[in-house]
Length: 154
Image (cartoon, rainbow, N blue to C red; front, side, top):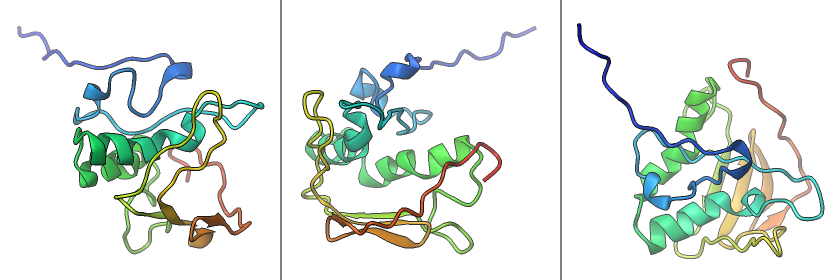
């Protein structure tokens, strides 16, 4: 009788799970998505709230070349949607909810720090949530069409 094959995984505490983990070398793993945890609560939320995805795109894709752009986008969109059972999200396709971020790959970068976490990133030009424009030319429109989603229900 054979033992099942061994699998490797990175495990991090939930309160310390930035999108890139404690070791950015883990990002290229085919099983590692770009999901992150964070909160908007309090005077000083985690800088992940404003900076995780811009940091992946700016630092780890553009500057360090740890990931390709297409791979990074999949890790931040379709992979987490599939993991959470969100059947109509994570891809640009007919019948899917239109959640889109338009960014400038040459300019995108995180500005949030632990001292100043509420800093919007640079290079995010437009954001569409559920088909509604919420960021236009880098400025929030005031629209708030987003809603909480539940695993395998939405």
